[in-house]
Image (cartoon, rainbow, N blue to C red):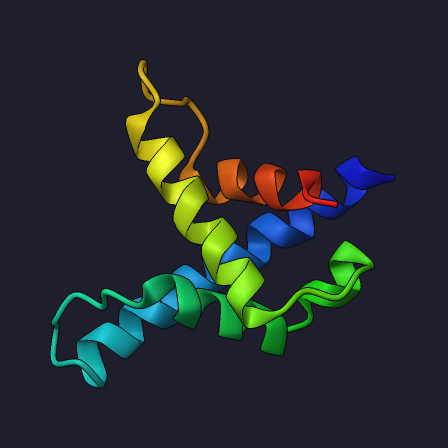
Amino acid sequence: MEADRVEPVIALLVQAETAHGTFEATELNGAYDEEWPRWYAAYAIEHGIGAVLVREVTTDQLAQLLARSYIEYERTRPKPSEPWAAYAARRIMAEP
């Protein structure tokens, strides 16, 4: 069931966010990573998002989806009550 898979995707995106924060702090010396969607996508793929989605997804596909989800989330008014990871996870699950 799709709903059963949303929570693991949310958890994976939250893990990616935490790991990326460390990456920005240590590897980029605190600089903002303009390529964060690609970094998140590579992390998620490396940590098994394809198995959770039960479909193959490329780094490029996932990075584009994450970037679009972030833009949509930021533009939504009023602001969504759910965190971005939950919003993005639902968008990822809705993709064919």
